Length: 321
Image (cartoon, rainbow, N blue to C red):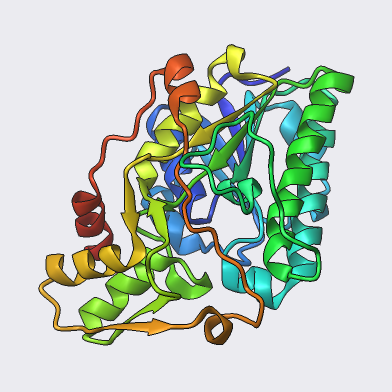
């Protein structure tokens, strides 16, 4: 028999996952975290450490022997566990592909046995090389060639989406897919190439802020608490099942302007320096010039819109670095 309001969060010791866990426990839910700590840390969960409503299992999802029984008792599953960061993708493409495919397959198989509502976290990377002004969920997707490891992450997450929709059709599993755009805030590490924590750490230390390429590429940054709000709303909206949603902010800024804003806001003397992509990553690396989401679908269904301005995001993130 299912216990009301018990959620499983894979990757729950990670950046987004730990904030989600805090939100759920704060709402009176019980939470089981499944995380192998490959990129997340138990330190991320220190605010709820020892809470009677929290159980933490240090294991890969695919190695969790009790996964089926744990999921069977859950109100829902948030599947956030994945390989993260461009640098990891470039350095370890085999690990990236296998991690994303295997772990999602295990989660969906376990959830499918009892039709447990499941939210699968995907990525804006699946939009690939599209040059549209903004990306909508029903757009065609344009992925680069397989000889470039850059695109292995996008393809593995896209296969996660196809697998999730296959479970919807064949098993009637209530699945929602979310394509996360750039999410930032406290606990995000620059270790895997994440741009905002890299910039903030450099500015606070007085080091140069390294900008890849010419810095004209633009991104939209969403505060992690806003992202978590969207995830919880979608999980609790049955009309979202079987659909894909963009989650993020649509306020756009060029990366070189972001660097300048960080320096100015932190009153730093750090200079800006530019590094060609082929030196930062590998020859043939391709980046997306723009990555701006159409957010109307999620807003229309759940009322969600990101509300935290970038200046406040920088302030909050800098206070934690």
